[in-house]
Image (cartoon, rainbow, N blue to C red):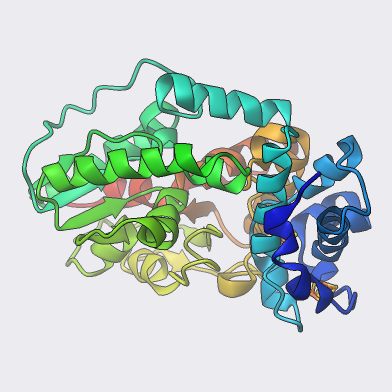
Length: 364
Ligand code: SF4
Ligand code: SF4
């Protein structure tokens, strides 16, 4: 197999000292205790592929895809290895050589056929006209087709705050395809269609509730296209508003989604928002902010290895239940994965998106 992209990272891979520090944080290693599943194992496998020393057989492909792209190993790595770049390059080379996991082929087919990874054709009616406005709300596929209540609560918050906003004729942002190594051409087409849709409406600030979509717009879109609007998470926007909230006598903790946490360092705003709630007690989990554990859903893992994803999520929910009555996060995919994880351990804890909690308490 020609592994051209992975080969370009050979020097980067050679800086791995095999110290094993990445083992202490990798959610996949915690789950299966297999060295090839942790960062250094993937670095060795990717190096073997780059040098054409090993064949991309099923076991190699499986291990390269056992990564949620949570970035925690990079935080821990003394050699500062760009593990996610290596994983993404290896995945792209594997896909180009025809090695794709069946669950990921299905996602790619769904997006080609319906414009969303779920393959759904019936979108919820959010009752908001698409019009010219300075503020736009990019819902993202998960809340357009699955966790629609998160989009509805966000829209309700905007209405209570009298925000003049519009929805966007959006399609998949391309995040999942990018992380599972799919064709760049397809992803560029998705990016262009979304940017054209935003520009048509004269939007100056585009708000997101999905951490993955925002990360994609902030990190990948600018590498290929110019755009002149601000992209930010709704927690950043709301933290600047004067919110009047009803009191809530509960202990609340916050799960940092990897996409806006470690990848984008948006740590303070969601906490500021939660601290605005009168009588609520905000508590941190043992692992929070930069050391937050992954929910187990990202990097295509929820689709390819749902059982592992569920076990990883269940550990996060268990940690939250040790300190709080409500586990809040700010990404619909994290919410859905954490709820899935709790199906396994059945902890007595509410799991919500921050927009759901804020809307329930917001006084118009
Ligand atoms: S922490 Fe970095 S240098 Fe150490 S084994 Fe893991 S990838 Fe290699
Ligand atoms: S990015 Fe996360 S899941 Fe992937 S190897 Fe690093 S710690 Fe493990």
